[in-house]
Image (cartoon, rainbow, N blue to C red):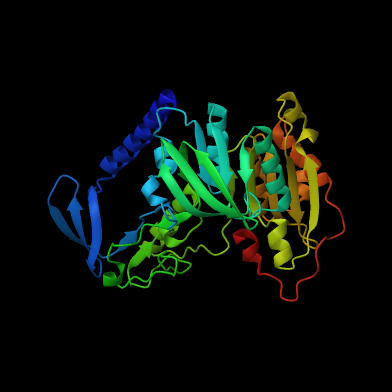
Length: 400
């Protein structure tokens, strides 16, 4: 585990050096410290090496990110739980890791730590893991994890935490009306994100926040204060690095007089379990909620020859196709190389190509992407959902 930590540190440091070199090459001034607004477009910085500075600008961009949410459960904060930050700084394998949260972060850490040798238990308050995804996605992930010896406890509400993470931890919870107790050596919180917007003087700057503490922005990422933008997690954008970078492009171009918007943009993502789970566009759950007609094609990963040659046949691919235009509305895959396969579908969606463009393509044999031909060859002619009285606008398909 010490080797894992050192590899992570080297990778992070290499990236830091790249960014520092970019600052030096650009001529931009980089100030390390803690800043807060003391007036409109005016920031006071407590410098990291001592002293302070007051800065005022024509344009201000807020990009303070987010942190792992540590809920106000009695004893949880006192237990000094791990977050994703501290979990990557461990120098030894946890004997038994309790993970609070069955979302993307919890899933990735659960499988990694289990494969390192830890006993792992996931505690999820909802009825299933990755509960916002389609039931077949959740079922596949749960089956994969249970096959690896990961204990999964769903529908559990944690009432009290005892002990200290790194030594002994006991989670007292209720499930189906009964009291249960889960014991381990470490606890990791992976149950959502909290924006880093508290105590930075936003109200002084005229910048409003939402009920959940995210900076209020419009589709151009402008805040309620003139000349002030927000980007990334703190602005309530989907919590992915690639979305934060896209926010930067939008803000930069708008500051320079452009007219870019977040409206209608695609939000692809990949969960780096093994096999990976990747998705873009509408899920079946979302399509049914919006009463959008769609045609569904679904194939097992085992139908892809490359998956067989890799001996990685767990999972499936599925696609939702519009009933009239033949446009691809959504794509999801649990499969080896799912994240790489996602890009081909995304480009087809960006170009508004019919699904037949992928069905009739010639992909290199044998590759994972070859599975797209089989997937789209199976698109039926019959829709599986009722017509919406008020169809969702085109841009919602990409946003969903």
